[in-house]
Amino acid sequence: MSLFFIAGIGVAVFIEFLLISKKPQSVSDRILALWMFLIIVHLFLFNLYYTGDMYDVPFLLGLEHPLPLLHGVFLFYYVSFVTGQLPRNRTILLLHLLPAGIMYGYLLVFFILPLTADQKIAVYRAGGAGYEWFNLVKLYAVTISGVAYVIVSAVMLRRHRIAVRDRFSDLDKVSLRWLEILTYGMGGIWLLLLLFRTEPLTFSGVVVFVFLIGFFGVRQGNIFAHANARPGPASPKDESDVQGTELPDMQSETAEHRKKYTKSGLRDDAADDLHAALIALMVEDELYQKSDLSIHDLASRLGVHPNHLSQVINQREQKNFHDFVNFYRIQAFKRQIKARKNQQFTLLSIAYDCGFSSKSSFNRVFKNQTGQTPSQFTASLSRDQI
Image (cartoon, rainbow, N blue to C red; front, side, top):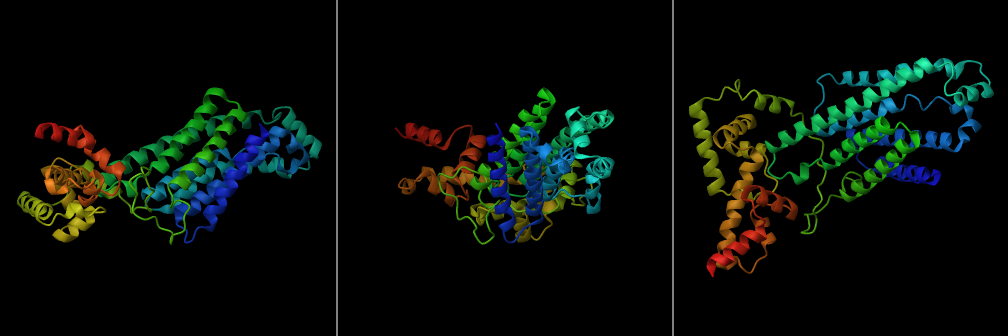
């Protein structure tokens, strides 16, 4: 079993090397690098404890106790920075480190007291004799902290999914499936801890978590890649999502949507004019063909604020921006697939011409809007023509 933990440490060290060698680094890259270093230290200390080698280095005894309080914090930090959901006063973020700091402060007595190595080892062998209250408080603090940060991070990701649909027409490049893996992976670790309360099983979950970070991180490319190694256009077989760059603060936009634009200041007549101009732009200029079209691009063409444009789309079309643009893409695809001159082209090449950037996004959007796959739709056309 120890070899399994050592393998986890090795993979974590490799991931850490990829992260610290990435140039340039964003804030979220640094947070992930610090978090991975924390995981390396935690796995290393546990493996020493698991094999019994910890007693050969008694000066390390006690260092591992506050570490579980930090994993949830770093998950929260990473999700906050990547999704742009940060508090206006970022110094508040430091308060999340306070519980671990308090715990280290309490253990300082254990670290600096003139106890012999044999005395410290005796405390450990006796299950923390003399520190019963500390162990009880630690148990509740770690449990509450872990569950709370996973829930908060999941809520932030849900808020992000709603927000990006009002800003981007192509979700693949801003998809945060990577963060979902991290968040739900952390949730799985805390579930193991709550259900079984056995450290070997819990840390086995941590090793699996590290493997998942390595697998999906490499698969999704630019998490570990250098900035100048940007991926090219998605291949037809590429069905993985790519983590987007850190997004600007979107809390104000989502808040306005929840308030149903009551304070937007956009009059009904102005909204009608904007709606008409929007439809004309989509039909005549076919802007939906731009695969990375965003609401900011469209608002710039129309000379309006993105929030006003989002309001018009939500209220007049009863759609978010993503569904609105992709409706035109699907309609264009249907028109083109019916034209005899296009029968020589593949479905995917026609989809790319209509503004889709990948096979996965095209299939997903088409099925959501029509209830059929593209192949089923074209097959029905063939039957009608017989």
